[in-house]
Image 1: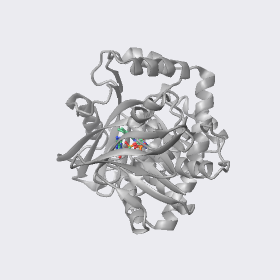
Image 2 (image 1 turned 180 degrees about the horizontal axis):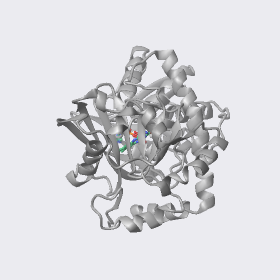
Image 3 (image 1 turned 30 degrees about the horizontal axis):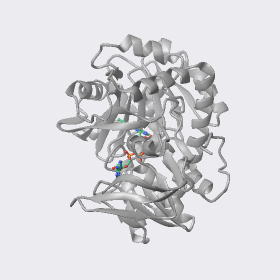
Length: 417
Ligand SMILES: Cc1cc2nc3c(=O)[nH]c(=O)nc-3n(C[C@H](O)[C@H](O)[C@H](O)COP(=O)(O)OP(=O)(O)OC[C@H]3O[C@@H](n4cnc5c(N)ncnc54)[C@H](O)[C@@H]3O)c2cc1C
């Protein structure tokens, strides 16, 4: 069976990898000249199994109201006359109900644990290097009030099978001495020793190169315009190359891994998927003083910023903006990330060598990706990974491969059936 994977971000490339490992004939199509060039390009770098809690939680609507009108707010909503945006926001509110949040957290935790295991297996098999660090993730709390919730959160995570430890302020500083430069203190933290970090784009590119060497057909610079439908099946995809030449690519089955753009392809089939782009930003800075920069990946729970050391650079990422498909880099959204790096690690980064970036998280209201069947017989979905696409990629791809083979993935997750 020939399976064509549509989209070569981290989700598409891992999907192609697991399908190929299962002995299927695979090809990969993307409009970019290589793999991992859109949302998977400069994300926060975290394999954050210890953060299964979705954005949609009982506190989220109040926080969003508090942040309204603030240009530098962690969540910025730019209301548009866009029914998709309103539909998404309404569903998001529904997912904030306590029992929905609980159910979503459990499903993400199960998939994330499976994914961590599958990522380690890919690494062992391929030996690819992607600036990975197995030094865990330290979640930081700035106020005693926020830190007071840490033991309860740790106990919930442990019940889900995720190892985490509550760490006092001195223990946080011992774990990550570079934090000692922070003037106004850290109340404490939660440490997840099994979490990891790494460069998602490098991983994706290296894995795609490996697939190419193994004979997988890689169609770069190929824009997917439309699905060619025949009855209840997909015959092929209508594509156009950079020269404007049109054609059709055929296969026996297809997998949609188009991130935020998945809905556009599926709409003509009459399938409306609840994926909306939630824009995020990052900066990647060369290090001026490596000894002042952290080596442990950090999640600042108070400021909603994540930070990962990638080789001799520091990546700082965060912020969420509901602004449609606009990928313009707004200086007022980059500024808080730069200020965060300055305040936490004074003198660590070279401010003359900072690369800003913005990407569109393919977000579902629940933050659960859509993995499994679509409305068409031979079309499968692996998309909508929102805030955790890098963390969930290998598990989602392995699970989808089992579903395509008619097997049940060993994960308690609501797959699309
Ligand atoms: C600021 C920020 C920080 C983040 N930090 C983290 C983190 O620390 N950890 C984590 O787990 N996740 C993180 N994420 C989320 C993660 O980056 C995404 O969930 C993930 O990259 C989504 O991968 P994808 O393959 O689904 O989408 P993409 O990487 O966007 O891939 C989709 C592919 O489809 C292609 N495509 C789309 N339309 C077409 C078309 N019509 N024709 C041909 N090709 C097409 C694109 O070119 C692209 O290559 C972060 C995201 C952001 C924005």
